[in-house]
Amino acid sequence: MIPLQKFANMLNIALFGPPGAGKGTQAKKMVEKYNLVHLSTGDMIRKEIAEETELGKMAAGIIKRGELLSDEFVVKLIENSMAQHKGAEGFLFDGFPRTVAQAEILDRMLEKEGTPLNGLICIHVPFEELKRRMLQRAKVEGRADDNEEAIEKRFREYNDKTIHVANHYKRKGVHIDVEGNCPVDEVFASIVKAIEKM
Image (cartoon, rainbow, N blue to C red; front, side, top):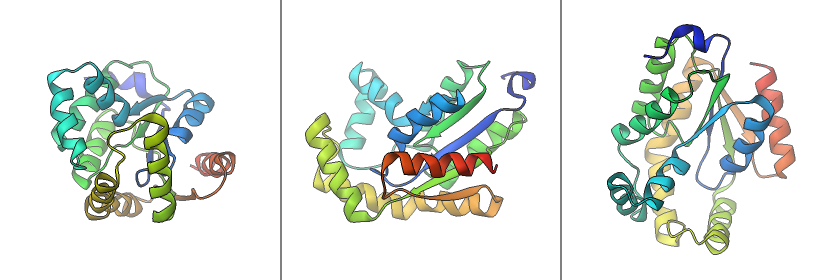
């Protein structure tokens, strides 16, 4: 277990929103400004896939079908990464938690260490704009998981399972909405304003 004193006065934030909302772009700016450790489940999983590990091969098939990885799989990635950053000033969770079960596990992990989640920042963007962004990203980055069928399925998964995470943190009083259908710097300014009110 990570010692409690290592986590005093930490800033822990979860960046939340549908696929294509710009979480990765905003995460880079937040990490730079607040010196947070960026825990991106997407990056971790893509690394496993690129290295063709057993976990990576398993994840690749699931993602290609537009389905979500199991809670156990994702939590293990997060736990391993947190353990490797014991002196961190804070964590930025990007793409996690994606289900209420994951949110409850994260809450227990952080509370056990005496450093709860300060806020869940939810970036809102209309569906049609999200779809446009993701199809464009597929062309630019060659992302096989950004095809029409997989995108539709990912949005169904998001609406069925992930959106409930926002309600979980609304009940805890740490949920913050941010408008994401505007220039990158405007979105970031809104996020900074929200963090300064925490």
